[in-house]
Image (cartoon, rainbow, N blue to C red; front, side, top):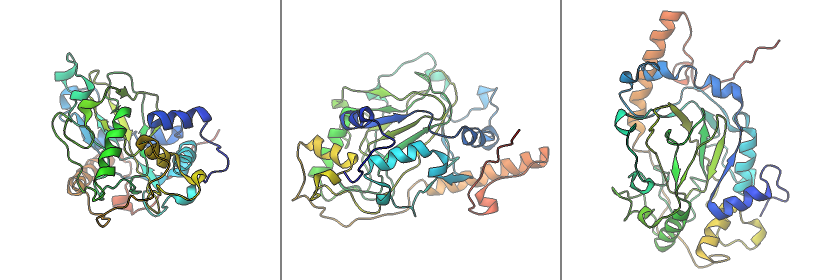
Length: 331
């Protein structure tokens, strides 16, 4: 590939990604950001952390108020990301170049504290990317990135993945060069692009605060049930490439690990005759309106808290899109 020497990914991590489609980068996020981006989460939610009866929603996709450049937020993970993608020069710095406090919260519900469920029956299996037409070579979702803001134990709402489902997604997109704008989902996952009912390999992603898990963009994944009701906080900042994936490079050494995983899944060295048959498209995600409403509600809660405590509201929606900096006291 284009990278002459790996500095962040070990040989074992590279092999693990090619075999299973994911890799964990332990303790990759600076601790001050983990603390700063979760310190007011209960104020933003409007819930009492000590009273589960106030947790009226089990899962919440929170909007972003503060952000820092990805390189600053998680340097080790950023290095691993561009090594998986074939080099930093292939990443589009104008899109999604930062990480922030857009936390994805899983609080669970009383219903599931005494119940279990098989992974394939979770009913939420998908691949990400609700803002572009998906093709086999799409570069909009270069990787699926999961950032753990707190320790996640088994049965505590960790994301489930199906590594052997990558082949289903790759094969479907290979056979549909016209692409798809909205990834179809169905209740049991048997007829969708992921075909989860044919999968046998399921992994619950657990870890410690600061771990970053990097997944192939075609990795089927699903939210799980938080049986323990221990609050779980993650984010999934996307990374976008300047150009589509190239599955027919003249020099095989230039393939990225993401591209190699697709080719190896298809059992080929290249795809010289494959091409898309519909125009590439980008569009506003369907969740945008809901996020706008959440921003307004969270800002009002933070304002009320600031008036009560004499503090300040730190949000780009009030102060403008300036990047947040954590000031660490010395001495």
